[in-house]
Image (tube, rainbow, N blue to C red; front, side, top):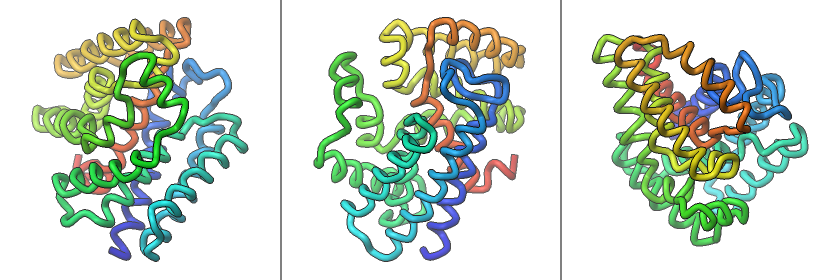
Amino acid sequence: MTSYLPRLAHNLVRGAFMELYLTPKPGLVDLCDCGAHPELSVPRMETSLKIVSLYLMDLCDAVLSGEDLATRVRIGVAAERAVQRTVGSSCHKGYIFLGGLVLCASACAPGRDEASLRCSITELAELFFEQGEPGSAHRVRNRFQGGGIREEALAGLPSLFDEALPVYRRELAGGGNRGSAVFAMMGRLMQTVEDSTTLRSGGRSGLKTVREDGRLLERMVAQRDDFIAFLAQRNAHYVSRSLTMGGVAGLLALALAWLSHTGELEAA
């Protein structure tokens, strides 16, 4: 456990950086532009991720030293505030929650397999949400009747384990490479994630757009079409509508982190 958790924390950071650099991503910050986020840039996101990295290491220490859930939550809240203060944005708020949830759940999971981890994630999420949920997330969920990150966590992250990871593995088994498999994951997540940032920026029609584009992307990857050109073209549309998909980005980062942790990225 003393070596497993720090290695997982390292891979959680690595996954977030890999997601940042993945290009193109409609409406999101990448190596081409800032998407629908004029206040952000790659350097600003990198600064945020350095804070996230320190947070995950601090959280890892807290878990290993037996700190209770309330203390771990305070560490997460402090990280959110540090990002907001330093970068002027809450750009990695969702990933701070997701990464912390997976890290803490891994410490109390009965095994190293994904089924055990999912059970542990569900149990920990239940404890966390008994204490309430952030006001903005609650308002978005009520306004659009969406489950968002809360329901995702309580269900054991189905978008990760039931959707993204199987798609990645299936694309590789079908003759694809790591690059095509990662974009296939993004396409599937665009279809399945009840993304609160999309709902805030574009409402239900925006979520419909993201889901339709996700279906096209996954199909284009499977058919070996030019999905890079498609994504670049859709980015212009998303920017014109100020449409984004931060929840998809967070879960994609988490998928990349887990695949890095299992060694599957390197194997590809």
